[in-house]
Amino acid sequence: MVIAFQIILFIVILVSLFMVIGAADDLKLRSHATGICMAAMASFIVSAVVL
Image 1 (spheres, rainbow, N blue to C red):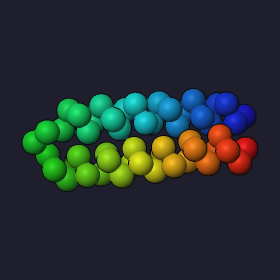
Image 2 (image 1 turned 180 degrees about the horizontal axis):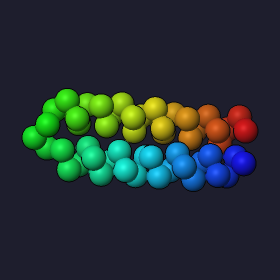
Image 3 (image 1 turned 30 degrees about the vertical axis):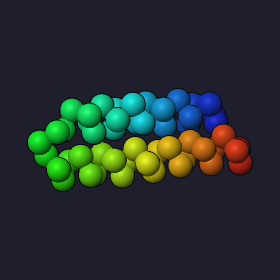
């Protein structure tokens, strides 16, 4: 179950990272995608350490 959660988080990190790279014109979309990427990274680290 933990591995499935980490795989989903990794997919979210990749998608949001590509959104940040691809959204050069839209600053609001870029900032939202950056926040999602940072939250997913923090969740991934916590799941790797705690769980």
